[in-house]
Image (cartoon, helix red, strand yellow):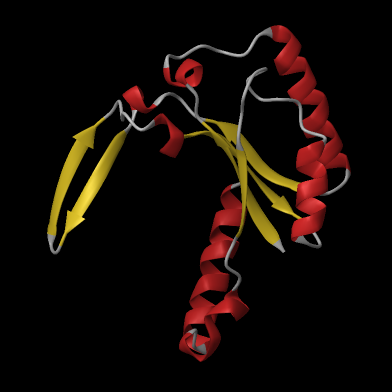
Length: 141
């Protein structure tokens, strides 16, 4: 099962405060353990929302909203994508994670949809298209 692990933003991450060397070292060691265990597929930190945009959809119309965004509790500061056997395994890995902010922090784990989750609506033609696109992406990596 694949999961996405979301590190929630804080006032500091939204202010652009970067982690210190101690936290960067601890996170680097943690990421090494994830990679060695075959768990980590991807992981990145994100710039503050002040450098981002949101696109609001209303029917056929699109409206771009420039950051920053005010609801810090709804924002993401970084993410991992992991391959794990179960949600319980993902939770065990998170319990070993260095505190991403050094203070109060929240990390969310959510399963990623897999092809079989979509049932009959995901036709053989759509599955073939998905596999072709994933192969093209893998070639670029």
